[in-house]
Length: 299
Image 1: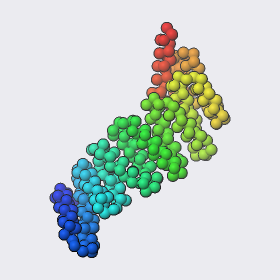
Image 2: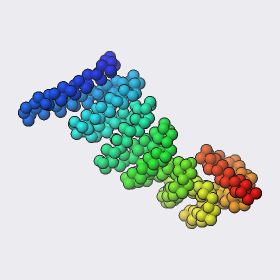
Image 3: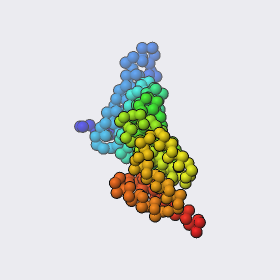
């Protein structure tokens, strides 16, 4: 681009000031037409052009600020909230690369607009991006969990069951890692019930029930763990013949018997055929530590 975006950006507030002066000096009702409104339209367009010019040069903070100024004009002066929300989304994209907190702020504003418009699908999609930002760039698991849950609820409200379940699963996974085991259990079981009669999802039910069972073991409530296993067999009769079910039965017995070595042996056997991922390894280590701590308390 031949023109320095900084020069273009400097011109824009002057153009807005000229629009304000034109309005104050207007005397007739027709001063609006061809006057203030057009000048604000031009100002917003100039800010957007400047933002894109900054973006090309990877000047992300400046690009985000320019997109925000365009959005502000569109909101406050032009009554164009849809265009403003689009510019806030663009601001999010560039801020995300260098200023994640600003990215979260502007995307939250855009999401609020879509909710007020009743556009749940678009709000949910943007809420997913916000959740990912909290999880990955900002490392705020609490806010990430809340954002994923809100996205899931909105997808569910828009009858997008598969997308809702995808995000409820994310809620469950994060909740378990944050030691909120009952929230995790609620969501895993919810997804399991939702998937049992879905031919495309039914094969995953055993995985959801396994994760729910692991979370039950992590709560140290063995009575409720055994009740849960019985309910899972009722929900899906085929679950009783799976390796996942047998693992939960074996691990429950090891916990009941205070046998950390037996617990580890059963995990190693399972891992030989079905590699344990990081989430499962983390939870199993916590449960094994619980067994060892209980042994120490009795010694």
